[in-house]
Image (cartoon, rainbow, N blue to C red; front, side, top):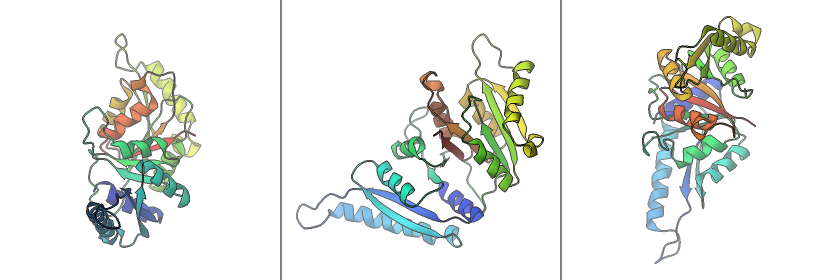
Amino acid sequence: EKALPFAAALARKYQSKVFLTHVLPEPQPAITRPGISERDERIRAQASKQIEEFGNSLLFKTVPHEPLLLESPGACWSALEQVIEEKNIDLVILGTHGRTGIGELLLGSVAEAVFRHSPCPVITVGPRTRLLHTVEAEIDRVLYATDLGGHYDALPYAVSIAEENNAQLMMLHVLEGTAVLPYDVPDKWADEAKRQMRDLLPDSLRNSTEFIVEMGRPSREILATALVHNADLIVMGVHADSTAPVAHTPWAIAHQVVGRAPCPVLTVRSK
């Protein structure tokens, strides 16, 4: 319910087509008659009705859209992956309910698979995302989080969205604090991190971008910065890092941010 208006508003802004996609499990054959079971018939009918209602809502009145009701004998991701390839999808938008626990698997298995494996960028609208109260995707402040580790696949998206929406771009780097380090960032370290972030930008954005350096746990500082600065979108890159502890890998950090973010999160998987 939170992801749908954001998807419609974003498609309207970028003059895009939306594929409203739902994946059903493979139906079971009926025992006493030919065809599928009555239970699966009810599930299919309910899903068909709901996805049709989504498409007929005022949200999509001026947005080109197509409902896709799919079946998958295994994991939903295989069906979604095929749609992404066949329809040449540029962006996946999904909502998560976060019903599986605090601090654990907040995304759910389907969202987790899309989040990890999608070949195109993914915008995740988590359970704590503010509701969109207008028909437009009002993106006034974009927060780009970077570990300055050389993986910048997400940066062009942050820059493009900021420019397209005439939005304030904020770049954040978090220095991981330890028990022996203060949580106030030494000026020398902050200045060096800001210089590195500034060098990543085109000249036209260097003076207007806000550069932020914090010290602490990356996921917590990203979320705190998004709240304090009232970000409308968080942009992050995710990549494999075999040297980091499991809890501190880019995937783990992005997972924690997505599950608790007050706004949508755009993640881009490094190729």
